[in-house]
Every structure is written in C-alpha cells, then in structure tokens.
Image 1 (cartoon, rainbow, N blue to C red):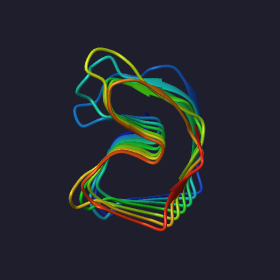
Image 2 (cartoon, one colour; image 1 turned 180 degrees about the horizontal axis):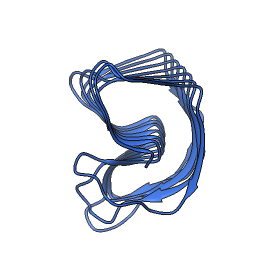
Image 3 (cartoon, rainbow, N blue to C red; image 1 turned 45 degrees about the vertical axis):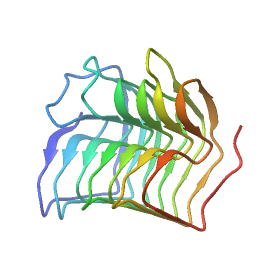
Image 4 (tube, rainbow, N blue to C red; image 1 turned 30 degrees about the horizontal axis):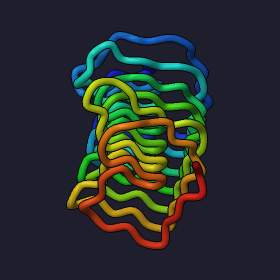
Length: 193
C-alpha cells in the first residue's frame, strides 16, 4: 500500500494509483491505498487499479482500503482482491464511523467469509455506491457473501446503492445485494446473477 495508516484529519484528493501484487499484511487491514483509514480522515476522488491479496485469514482486505473508519467519496477501485475474512472490492471492513459515498468497485473479489463487492463487513454508512464484477466465496464454512456487502451489521446503513455483480458461491447467507443483513437497507437493488 501507499500508506500504512491514514491518520485522523488527513485527506487524499485526486490520486490515480496502479499497483500489481500483494504487499506486506497490515495489522488492521490490507488495501491498495492504505491498510487502514482513521476517523475524520478523507479519501476523495481516488482511482485504484491492480491486484492485492492477503495471506492472513483474519486481515481485512480491500481494493482501496483494508479497514475504513473515515470517509471515502467519489472513488473507484478496479482491483482484483483475494483474502480470507472481510474481503471487499473497495474496503475489507467499514467501521461504525466509516462512510462510503458515490463510489464504485468493479474488480473481482474472492474470499471465504464476509465477502462483498463494495465491502466484506459494514457497520457504517454506504450511500449512492455500486459494485460490478465477480464475487466469489469458497472454502470450508463459506458464509456471508453478497454482491454489495458480505455482512451488514446492526449499525450498518445502506441507501440508494446497487449491485450488478455475479455471485459464485456456496454455503450460508449468500445474496445478490447482501449476504447477511441485520442493519438498514433503503432504496437499494441487485440485478446481478
């Protein structure tokens, strides 16, 4: 990644990033731009393309960011992402303070548990965002695989978002939009297969 952690108050604006290959696993996550983004940090108008993977099942992996606690807006990830748990096309894990707005992922994503086109695991807010590509869940005990999100937790809010991803998976909690939802979803649809 370009940054290990993007600290609170930091802003990245208008960056185009292209990398190919796996980087060293971060403690909080693995992403093309940053392993983790702190509260009150912002990623605006960023485009990323390439390939990223994590060797550790418990490390969140995302096309742009591993773990997001800040704001991601008007950003695009065309990244092939592979990992174990909490794997997403844009972010691996979107925390309760995390916000993703007007953003798109269209890379292919593969993992075992909590795997989604935008985020593997969401406890924050996702607005006006969409995913395309192929989302694959595989391995023993595959669970929570979705075109947009693998899991939308109780504090998670999804609004005006869309998935056209193709799902290739077996196991429990597989969905075109969200694999497992216990949060709020408003005005959001899936047209994938």
